Amino acid sequence: MRVLVLEDDLELGPVVADRLRGAGFAVDLARTLAEADLKLSVNRYDCVVADRSVPDGDSLTLLAARRRAGSVLPFLLLTALDAVSDRVAGFEHGADDYLVKPFAFAELVVRVRALCRREQPARPSLLRAGDLEVDLPRRRVTRAGVLLSLSAKEFAVLELLMLRAGEVVTRSELIESCWDEASEPMSNVVDVLIGQLRRRLGPPDPIETVRGVGYRLGGEA
Image (cartoon, rainbow, N blue to C red; front, side, top):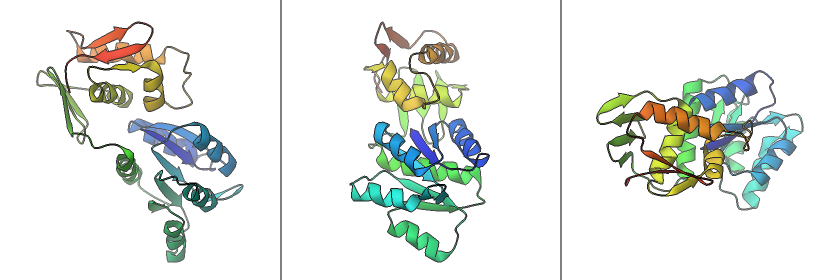
């Protein structure tokens, strides 16, 4: 799941992005309405986390413009404006959620994950392929009953491969879903991560390399 964070605070913005990345999201960071609007025009996102007050205006203007254009992309407003009138204005302009600063990062992660799920097609909570099992709500991976320890990025890649079990998932699809614009699409980040994931999963290797295209996880989910 890919998230756009609109935050002009030079300290808070990177921290919010890093905390969300640590929870398994791909995150892009914008500091102005113009920059956020451009990123929304060229990238696909599952959620936007936006500060109300940024150097070139109020993010409510961006939100309202997106809603007028027919966008249903979830927006979470993250702001110090905590008056009832401010919260009401946020929802009247089309916000899906509102979190007042200061906030707990654990709560932010849970709220963003809930908003992202709204945009996802219905999916089972438990994925299986052969002896490999992924419990999505608990973010647990087991193989032949043995609990495995995966990084957030490894879990994200495995989740996509499991959801598409039996199908070829291209490198571009993996980059778009599991990485953000800080990653270089032409680099070998996908191949390196797949190598790490294979070592985590152990033999026999459940991931097939489709040369020149991408990867396929065998079996049925």
